[in-house]
Image (tube, rainbow, N blue to C red; front, side, top):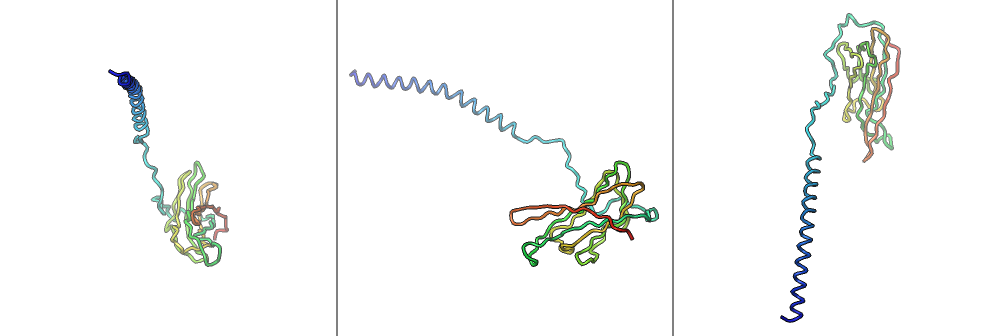
Amino acid sequence: MEVSEYNEVRALKAMNKYSNRSFCIEKPIWAIANALLLVILVTSCKRPTDEKPVKVLDEHTLNRRVDRSTVDPLTKQVYVPIYSDIYNQTRDSRTLLTATLSIRNTSLKDSLFITTIDYYNTGGDLVRNYLDQAIYLRPMESIDYVIEQQDTSGGSGANFIIDWYSKRPINPLFQAVMVGGLGAQAFSFTTEGVDVEAP
């Protein structure tokens, strides 16, 4: 065998020797990487929870009616401004909003009795009555009334008139939340109820 052939055979043997070593090193690395990947996939999967979905109170009436003979004559009245749309750039351009009236009984002990929830438009015309009989909210209970975005019956000067009373002095909360968007930007704002003289 010539010297050049001998050197070539030696070089091939050396290459095979090193390639076998690198294979032996790479094999455990691949096994570890695959095991880690499997652990990550298993732990990232969402496990079913035992939590029950929250029930949203989305009704305009409660099955807790009050007999009209028990209604307190010393009823208080609240005015809550609503913006079902707002002007955008010009008087002819309007942005429609979704408005939510929120009535909250803040008392820990006493019920809030509500006899009237009336919705008026910008011109002062009655759009709709939400109650045909008095209802009550238990301590710390809330109820919502939604004016949907496509409901344009109220206009920019819409409002709610709410008549309420309680057996003992309480301080309920009457608010409205308006939500809308201009292009890609969303915005929201709130209004507070104002006490007015009851009839």
